[in-house]
Image 1 (tube, rainbow, N blue to C red):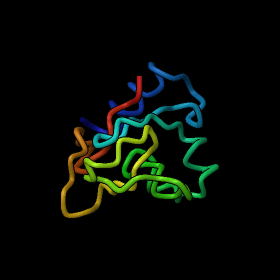
Image 2 (cartoon, helix red, strand yellow; image 1 turned 45 degrees about the horizontal axis):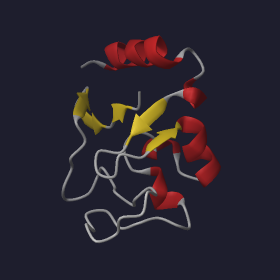
Image 3 (cartoon, rainbow, N blue to C red; image 1 turned 135 degrees about the vertical axis):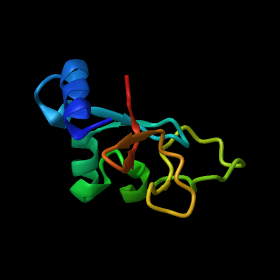
Length: 98
């Protein structure tokens, strides 16, 4: 998918205000808006690339199947195991959280 195609899909799903766009972590399934990432203090480059839980005080460890809490994890898309489902111009990203 090209960046332009991805932007068009995001605008179609969520509108022009990118702060309202939602992304789903491929590991824990948590859905976070761009505003959620910003409020957590995450860098812009993390949006749709790493789980928002990485920047929250309370989160669970990615790939820890023992932790059954319904909270975001600390999965990072740039790590050794990249399970992000979409490729946008060579960059792996999370799916939109619809």
